[in-house]
Amino acid sequence: MTCDCDELGRRLTELRDGALGESDCAAIQHHLDECQSCGALHKDLEDLAQLCRESERPRMPLAVRRRIEQALK
Ligand SMILES: [Zn+2]
Image (cartoon, rainbow, N blue to C red; front, top):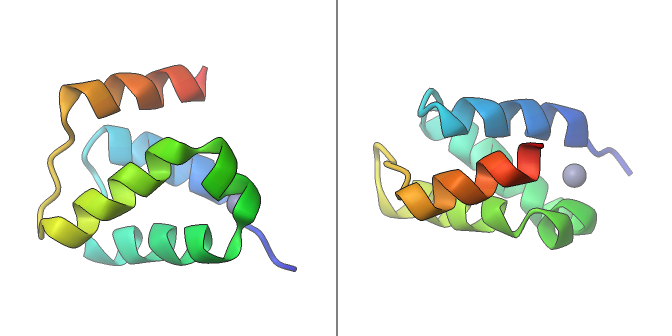
């Protein structure tokens, strides 16, 4: 089982800064589909993935942003 959880964490930081594009959103979604631990531990990622699906240029609600910042601590 391949799981680039570390990279996902790095992407999460980029997402927080609003630096990710559509392909990055897709990569995160793909990882969430395959990695149950990330899906369970990082519920915020699912929210982000949903934002990615719903918007071409996702904007992060402040509440989600704060939860991600807490998760990264
Ligand atoms: Zn993972």
